[in-house]
Image (tube, rainbow, N blue to C red; front, top):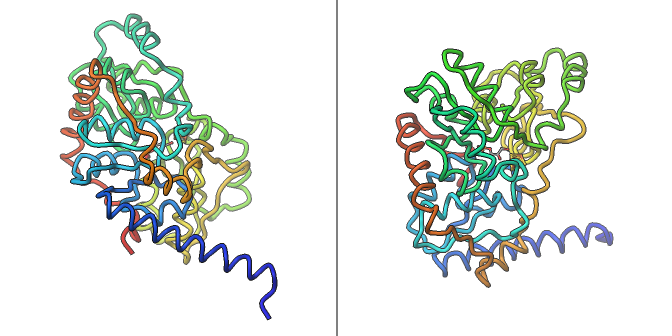
Length: 330
Ligand code: 13P
Ligand code: SF4
């Protein structure tokens, strides 16, 4: 006889499967594409047409023939998709899904920072508003920040808003002086150097891998530092068996699911971005059905902000882009 608990699990699973099918069917009817960041819940990743990091998803947004782009990520990612597709409808299932780091700089802050370092071009991390992008010289993601900065014909560069990534770029590009803004990712900065030291003692044979958004004291202790896609590819291609990931839990969960033969560990407290977890199968279905929340960008900034992304694409298209998790379309 099936226990009550087992029955409720089966009911829940079949409800989810039904919802999954309904989302796929509705997306087909409306010619919508579902783009999902790899920090999202696994079920939201599974229903996506494309899962990836912000660079890969920006490229997918630029290529799509869909009429509607539904973005399961944070606000600046949906805004970037809108900049690349001004005539298409771009939806963010839960409008609360913002990025606190992106909110740490506004146009006035950037103007003041530029005044303090006159003449230095501004590299703006994609984790920023369209208004801030519009006041910059070129955009970057964590995957291409080093290449983008190197590509600039200037001895001094301003980097906004992430100081973890900015310090990583400075370390990789010592020939330039980088003026780094004081923003940070609250999720990655939860990881402390004391916790990394503790993990190193407890698991001396594990490879420690950090996202460059971490505190420099943390990424300096890692064996490998890389963006989301670089972390994924590093583990995929490594012969090692034990890894400790210093990054967000959505990425950790996806790597655990895709490489069950490897031991993928994390740190405590769990680095979890609450803003990335607002989207669910339920609100994804509703958002697609009722077509909310539509993301718009004022005309006064759209053209300049778009130009920054185009410049980034020009530089980063010289290199092959990650095509997303290995299990992307299975
Ligand atoms: P990626 O550029 O690696 O997708 O990261 C975006 C982000 O918000 C990381 O915290
Ligand atoms: Fe922003 Fe950090 Fe969340 Fe990424 S993980 S969306 S940088 S708060």
